[in-house]
Image (tube, rainbow, N blue to C red; front, side, top):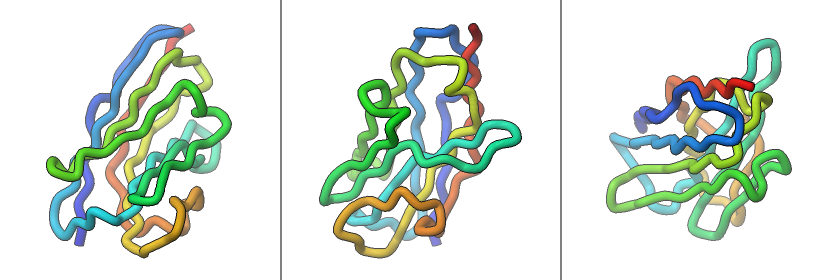
Length: 124
């Protein structure tokens, strides 16, 4: 069992930055794929970025603006978000995929454990 708790969300103006954190507890795996997804009101959950020991995957909307990283010693996943836009407004979810994969998956169906979500609101 893995528990995930996000923090760092909030309200920011267009062009601003935020850093989300996700602390994992319980049974953790250094080779586990960890990822970030987001869901805006009325929309489906959307892949943002993911990381495992083999590499990083990013969505087109996050590329060059969002940076994912992890500190295995602290069991913490991060998402640094820069140049935020109003369309980035969503609830951001941290997720863990315990299955060993050659590359990080961008499918929500691959992720078994989910956090409760952190609201990010970007004002125009």
